[in-house]
Image (cartoon, rainbow, N blue to C red; front, top):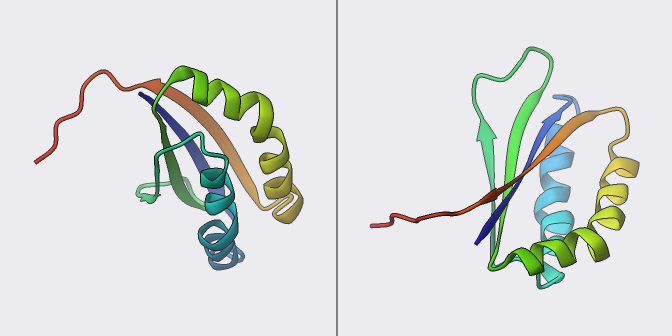
Length: 104
């Protein structure tokens, strides 16, 4: 499985609007692509001065599904985010391969 993590530092003045939009629009749109089986949004603690930082994590069952997301959907969805919050955020993306899971 693939864990796709997007870390976003957002301007505190717009962070609640951003969170509301992420919950109501962006994350549902990403999930609607059918490329991911789960997602979550987490607050990153100990962030740099000047912003609030969040990690948005998505899990894809296969590399092929993740690659499909990247080629067919990512640009449009990222562009919508950038247009809506231009100049108010910084983001970086990480793709990880899940090797093992340990759950209770």
